[in-house]
Length: 114
Image (cartoon, rainbow, N blue to C red; front, side, top):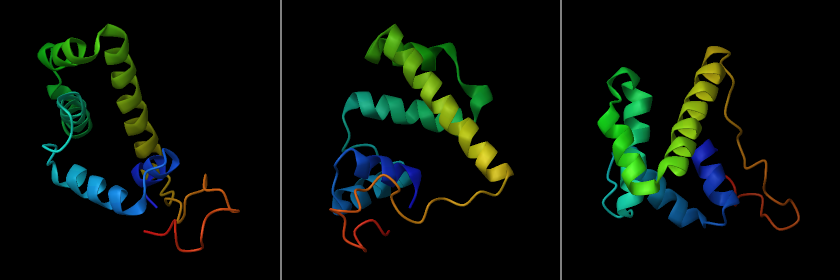
């Protein structure tokens, strides 16, 4: 299970909605998301794919949308996620095959499978 799917499941979102959201995120179609989410996704995408191209304007959009403190949180979190992905990739660590945070008492055996 991908980490994005796992985090959405931990947040209580159902499997069908998780599939819908991750598909839209992967396609870069953020039109169904709020304007704030679209700004955050665009920044995260740019920082992930072309970090040297992140500009003061990009950070300014985050600050305008979220305020200084939340903008810093977003920049830190996206940077941390990229760092963790690169470390995992370097060591060729596999993703978990199931949601390790799922409650075994309430989850069905196939509920957490992609």
